Structures are given as structure tokens and as C-alpha cells.
Length: 103
Image 1 (cartoon, rainbow, N blue to C red):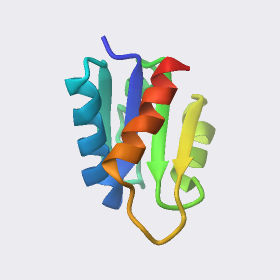
Image 2 (image 1 turned 90 degrees about the horizontal axis):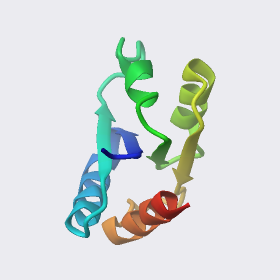
Image 3 (image 1 turned 90 degrees about the vertical axis):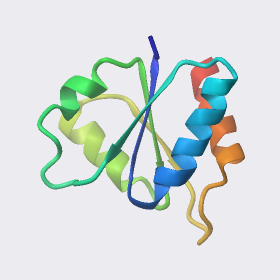
């Protein structure tokens, strides 16, 4: 029933999981997927992405994965970036995801 998918890879697993858990406890329907390999992408990734109205990709860079996802699957994946040498905080990420849900 979730309309939002949070897609991650690499070191974002912990903060994404904590943020999604917070939102679910607050009653929000949010889905989460985490990629282990980027090349090649999983064969069913396009099918999964199309199930959701919104896709948010938190990244600790300038949005390279979001760029690849948009180009390959033609979905409007939103990038949530942080490039300051510090990991995402679950509370900060949960607030950004809540904003995406309400948008």
C-alpha cells in the first residue's frame, strides 16, 4: 500500500532503515529497498520502481545513483543528497521522507 519507495545502496542502509522504521511507527506506509550491486542492476528493478508513485534515493554524494536510475528506468527518482563527510541522521532523513510523502 506504500506510495513511496526509499532506494539505497552502500553505507546508507542503517540511516535509511532507521528513518523508515520511524515513519512506519508514525503510521506512514513507506517501502524500502537496498541494492547490493549496481552493475548490473537487479533484473526486476524496473518493475519494482514502477510500482511506486514516488522514489527517493538518499545518497552521500551528488546523486549518481539517482541519475543512473532516471536514465535507465525513466522514473522520476528524487535525490536526497548530503556531501559533508558525515552520515545521514535518521531523524533528518525521516523528516525529508515525510516531506516527500506529503508532497
